[in-house]
Image 1 (cartoon, rainbow over the protein chains, first blue to last red):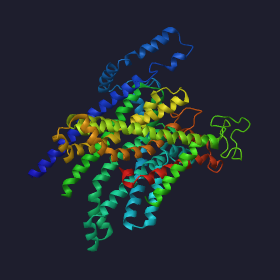
Image 2: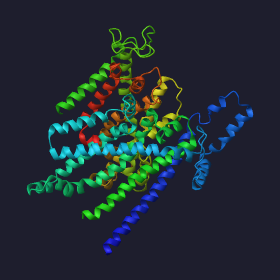
Image 3: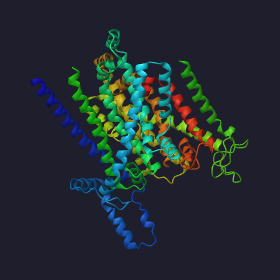
Image 4: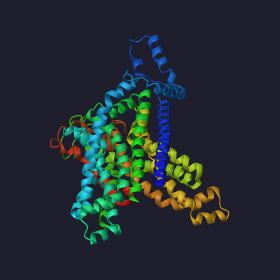
Length: 297
Length: 268
């Protein structure tokens, strides 16, 4: 009873510490992105100023609208004040409130990245598990060659190939993430299978499925959960070239447009969002590992 | 060294040698336009045909390979030195410095690498001379790619700080920069070399990604990224298979790098 209470307290403390670290890193990430944009050469340049139909007063008004962004600390403070009240600012390039843009696009990104991740995990774990169960060198060489080949192709090329072959964008994401999962999980499983107690279990006549479920997964499982957290970040990064080149109107494409047009409010929001999702995924994996550990003991 | 590693080493060296001999193998150069033969198929004059504006594709592949293969190691050197400075020093100093460095690297690592790269590259001037664009692209790769290596180095340096020989050196009166440069840094060499070699293929791929998205090396200078961008106009593989040569070359070189690095290094 006392041990259970202590475990719950440790878990709660771990979650609180993670949340504190996430909040600090997200805030710093937003500030870092805002500072980078502010320091960029030609930050003040606005294409709209080249419009010959605008008179001097309109150009002045345009410049005035960006005046608040010159002092980065005051810009960031006012951004945070607005964010607390649900106002994420307005995109300069697209002329729309940022929350509307995110609301319109998040579903596309979640669908593309989600299905892509699911396919990548299915393919990689099936290949890794079967390679460890069968232990045929030809099969292992095939898995290593296939994953190695995809590891050598840039994400943007896989996105281009999916356009040429009329394949869905999530397939490109799956092929970008798959080799990383396969390589890592294959090594983890191989190390777990090499442990002496697995050999002893085999000698006692335990079935392969039982060995996998009872003896291998508890050893390799925590690291595979951590890997799952990291793959969210890989998929998010891959979403940028995939959405930009496949013409998918998601957050990745929005990030691409925001970077090209140096759209400060949009870039800061996207950095905060991407950092938040990445950190939440990693922390979620950490907490899950912590929750599973006592059962092992 | 096993046979596969030997073969990989030979392939990388051969590709480097051929790309360095580009001036002799493709005397026309990468920018010369053969206006009478735009989008020409392979021939004796143009081994890989020409692009849409009549430039010899073989010459562009050779010069592009040279740029990517020479500058990726340069960027890897910058990132490894930065990692040694941040991670190595923080690990050696320990305490608050180590926690601060780890927080900073965590911040960098929490952002997807490609997102950070695209954002920073797009913020820098795009209408610059081709040579400046090459330097900007690879310098960004070097300056932004240090975080993962710094994390590894900080852990190694932290372990060294508490090792017996460092404690003995401290007890003998050695402190500060001398202890770091004479005893700690030389022992970090294997980790530094590993991080350097791991970074090269990563930076080659990153440059290719940037180039395809139009944020890499500026025209007319070729690089693997700008050469792969040509795939955008490809309708089917059967139509013009020779346009896939840069991709095949990239895959061959990257596979060779993978074979050169041991399994543990790749998955680290």
